[in-house]
Image (cartoon, rainbow, N blue to C red; front, side, top):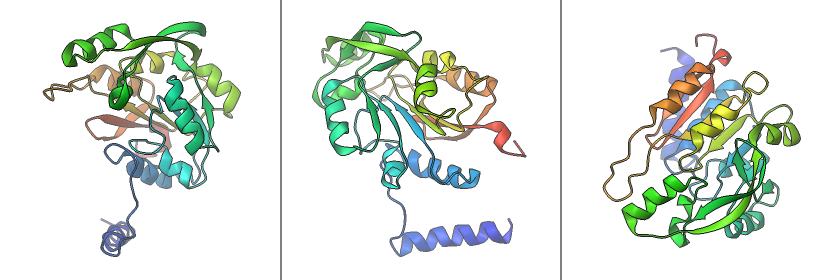
Length: 238
């Protein structure tokens, strides 16, 4: 271990002791890991695209960056959550849509109520799994879908530095729709477990990691719930 690394480790220990440690707003500390990764990549103010924002602050992978003055686009198809986010994050671009394979005007969005509104999804199969396992019903709303490449083209130059993706069952479909030959976001954080609310029966979705690795990314970190991928060519020893 070199001197610089020893110094950095000691500094982090002192930060904790003297209460200078960074706060996390993510579910399991993903934003702190990603912040460290961007500092390694020397990207000080990353842009972001958050797909499936839901809560604007807590359990959110981009709010820490928002507080630092970074800017991005938040995608939220639930109109109630959209209005909440709009009040609390006025400096972000906020779109009341979903992300899909194609551009469509009216697609079924299966919305769960109250505290479990984070389960809402465009996948009926996924919605029925949650309904059958918990007894909690959903309502169906019509929401427009936009292709992710069109979002890149309209709002970024040429792509966001960071994508946070959590869409309850359709994450791989969205990743597969990205034109990676044209757009290569440096960091992508994806939920990579199946639903297992009642008995902790969730399983890792290995196909997501396999696909990301095939597109030139490597697994930088995994928190069990989410996997953080980084563009491999950015690391000389990658």
